[in-house]
Image 1 (tube, one colour):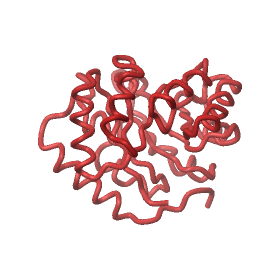
Image 2 (cartoon, one colour; image 1 turned 120 degrees about the vertical axis):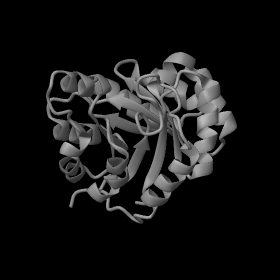
Image 3 (cartoon, rainbow, N blue to C red; image 1 turned 60 degrees about the vertical axis):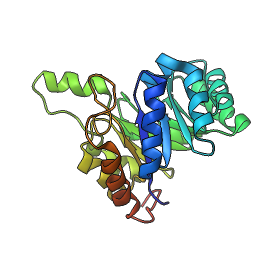
Length: 235
């Protein structure tokens, strides 16, 4: 599988999200993500606006669904999302409902293993229930809370190889990665590279980061796409 670069629009204003998305498309980004802050702020309206502005571009709706799975996935699909996110810690029936909605409405399902007691088993559980992708995720509050108490901040890279080797579907690593770490994800067998806070979005203010973002994104995309095919599945 060729590497895919996804930008997470973890913003709270649709106009800024549209501007950032346009910049990202010019730089070579493949997928747009309607981040959870943007979904909370703009809802279906934000997804529709992005779909109108970028026809044909895959759009991930980071719903973090925990219940009401079929309806949430259906609503986002009809608004223009091509991918939706459900949590591994949701009930199995919720995950099954999202997967069924995905089939019914032609959207792919990304299962997120955040806060699973066993992250590897959580990834396998998501695959077994029919998810199309695994998001191996260390949460924002979890990372910051652990670091604030003087401990080493956990990273999705800690178990990324184990997760990749446990499933036969593509994996994405999310959660406090540095720029260098994000670019290296394909080396770990994770072809879906997400760029967001703190790489392109200010992690504290949830606004677009300062600097020449477009030039930086272009270089990042070139490096990631240069990996060529990434083997997906158990080795």
